[in-house]
Amino acid sequence: MADYFNQYHLKHFAGTVAQCMEIDLPKEYAPGISWLSKILKTRLGGSAERAILFHAGGVGMNMWQKYTDIFAAVYSNTSIAFPFCSTENSISPVAHASMYTGLMPSDHGVDSYSPQPLSCSTLYDELIKIGKHPVIIAHKDSSFLHLFRGRDMKVYICNTGYETIDTAIKVIEEEDYDLLSIHMLDYDTASHSCGPEAKDAKNALDFVAEDFDRIVSAAKYCESRKRTLISYSPDHGQHQIDTEKGGHGTALPDDMNILHFFGTI
Ligand SMILES: [Zn+2]
Image 1 (cartoon, rainbow, N blue to C red):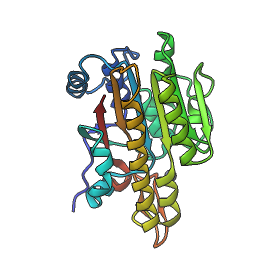
Image 2 (image 1 turned 45 degrees about the vertical axis):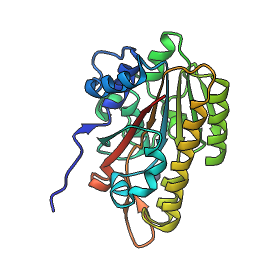
Image 3 (image 1 turned 90 degrees about the vertical axis):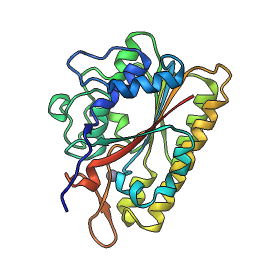
Image 4 (image 1 turned 135 degrees about the vertical axis):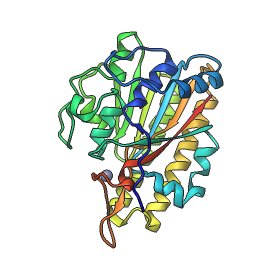
């Protein structure tokens, strides 16, 4: 069977969020998908005043194809499923660097697990420039912590998935953000240790979907009722590398094809 790859590269993610928030990214960055941002803005009733971007690490589109029911909690909070193609080196720092800039890896310069921060402008930098407050909440092993280091923004470092979600809910309830990035590693970690379709990995995927539901529920009950863009946005998938383990970093469709979900409050 032929290998099929999703049409849109992840580099179009930042531009799409920027279009929804009506902010500008550098002209040389990949544009947003304008029909998608138009639909989302219509559903929002105007531009997004806030965004909550939930990054479920390592969740490939094949998991959605094989275990659709696990995503019920994601469907209940979103209205559009959109297929993206990960970066060719399908690892978190490379993918997140493209997702938060609009650049290919050859242009943003991240092609490995190197701890260097990005030197080019990012979606966060463009928000900070206009007085907005982006916030990162991520596990201590997350690539978000070194990629975006040195910016004038709040970064919460958490030890567990539970702590990540509890911290995110607190920030949402305090309404102390304009754009919130949450990085969950639970499924990626479980898949590495026991395989992408193992029971423990599927349980982790299920928990992460429920976590997304908790995050969106918290945002729905905020007093200010600001127009909020929501996304469930994996970085790459995983493939089985032997009988007991999963991995990624290749150009296999299992690593490359991912599905994002967008919603509005
Ligand atoms: Zn991984």
